[in-house]
Structures are given as structure tokens and as C-alpha cells.
Image (cartoon, rainbow, N blue to C red; front, side, top):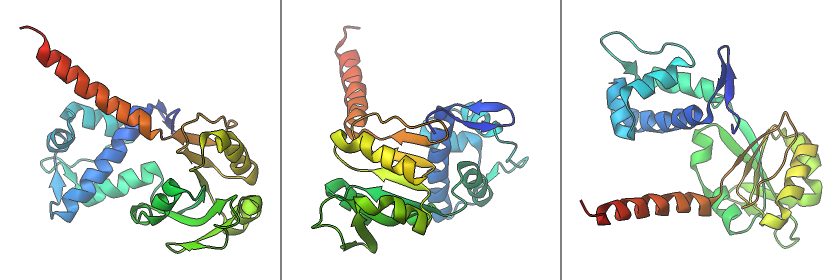
Length: 222
């Protein structure tokens, strides 16, 4: 959701939506460990946020806490999933069955979060007709037909950068509502189609910047 989601109060910043995903993951871990309730200060501390930040983020969508108890983990999980739209199943189509595409098809965490990859597409005839971790691979030429037949809601782009925009255009023309782009290229989509880019090299650059900043600070004379 690069432009923020919307509530009755207006647009919600993307940073808030990102933190909601972090809260959801942490709540799942807490529930798996047998913890039934948690306070905003405890949840924030585990993720490096203040309790005020947690409360402010959740306040965009309503009131979820209980006096003297805090948040019930299972209840807050349900509410955040409703907010994020993962309380339903989303059919996903993946384009590009290279190394990254294979890895994404093999990842089992998608299904538990409401995402089901129902089809993969590739231009290489040698890959077409394969079944990878239970997902059939189709020709890219049949993308529009399969998107309609399988009622695919979302598309994942895992092709080289030079093919990213053409792939996005194909997905949009086929009728998908949102695109997750792993190609190191910023694709353009029309208004009404959501897109999120995941540039792994850029993410690593954020890590190295943080590391170098800490090293520089430690090297400065006091």
C-alpha cells in the first residue's frame, strides 16, 4: 500500500501499515508461546517502538484494548487481519520462474497469511507444464486467460528488470488488483491498481547504512 490505506478519518500513512504487519507477526509469535494478553508498552518494547506509537497506530482504526488487561492477542490478531485484508484468501499469480520465483513458490508462509499462489507463468517453454511445490507453471502467453479462470487477485513480478514493465502491463490488462514487484525496476500502473516494490539490494543498503553510521559514531572522538 505505497500511498496509504484509507479509513473514515482519511489516508493512513504507509509507515503505519508497515508497523501493523510487524505487530501482527509479533502477536502470532506471542500466541504461539502461550501468551494471551500484552500491553502496548510490552508490544512496543519487543519491536523497538514506544507504547505511544503502538496506541497511535491502532487508534487509526478504532479501540481494541481492555482496561486493566491490555490487548488480547487473539482478538488483536483478528482485528489487524481485517484491517490488512488478510482475513480472506487472496489468489496470487507469480510471473518469472527463475531462482527467486522458485524460492517464492517454495515458501510455505504465504498460505497461513491468506495468500495462495495458484499459478506461475514463464516465457521459457522448458519450464511450462512443470509443477513446482504444487503450483502449475503456464506459458506467459496464457496469463490473461488463467487470471480470469483462476480468479487471480494479485500478481507477483519476479522477472529481470528489463521485462518488469511489460509484465506489469500484462497483469494490469488481465485484471489483477495489486502487484508485488521484486524486479529492481519501478513499474508504472494505472490508478486503481496497487503496487509495492521489494528491492532486496536496496534493503541491504539500508542495513549497511545503519552499520556504517554506528561505526562512524563510535569512531568520533568524544
